[in-house]
Length: 143
Length: 254
Image (cartoon, rainbow over all chains, first blue to last red; front, top):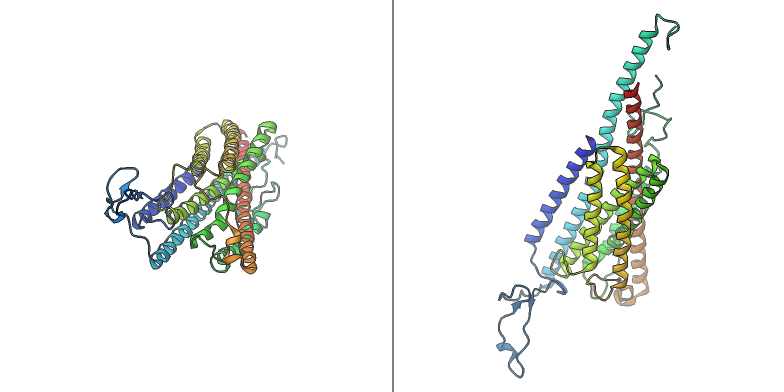
């Protein structure tokens, strides 16, 4: 039972983390610092011998749609993006460790509850044994 | 009625017969040690460690990303070894080590994925890239071990669940080695960075390189302390659960 509850807790925290990550992703502009694989907009090749300023708008490499290329980040924007992402990383890692600590704690609480039941059962069994054997010297626990 | 001493987890009930008291254990000491090391590591990585030419501020996540990745593989290997020993001996102590290794390894791998995704968002403009074999194999590994835990929780018969987990952990560790092989053999094909160029730390200033090495060392120590402390604590909890289960079974039989 405690195990199932722990899994439910873990699943809830993971779902929350996913939601936060997705929200962060929607809120963060999709512009890369170095732009390696994230470069969705591929600049078209300049026409041979022609004026490069007359080139058509950049085309998306995957969808084939025509989109304007995002402007590069200014140093201030870049710094702000890095701070925001570092905060997301710190929050997510903190959430992970907190979730695991909560999970361990839930298991310990479940174990203590089981121990309480076990102790009660053991006391009851011991009491029954003593009571049954009280009048019979031959019985185990009898006087 | 002979009932063994119950376990003690938080000091509520004290027992010495089963050797499963959580108090003053090595795991707790290691956790206290990591409570000092982790803030120190974060502070050092964010403030003291030098910038690396051509890399952004978020490269500092690497001081926790790389140790977490390698320690996750170590923990999965420990889990597989415990699984093998359980299949060999049938001793429940190995089962406790196995489940602790899988869970803490999964935690470490989650940290790897989170820190890597954040770094990728800044560098590549995306949280995740499916074209990269390193990233994809890590994701598959994560899902595989989550599946192992789910299967373990769903199988009703305890003995079957443990045996199944042992077999799956052995299969899982083979996939770990495959993922590492992909990383080392396919370095030219992967987008994932291979090494942090320490020589580019602030123009190869010896002091900066020393600070960078110190950041790596503290990051490694902090991660190792945290994961192994959690491993030991989880193992202790699993052992305590086994003991309580045995007592319950004995009471039911009586």
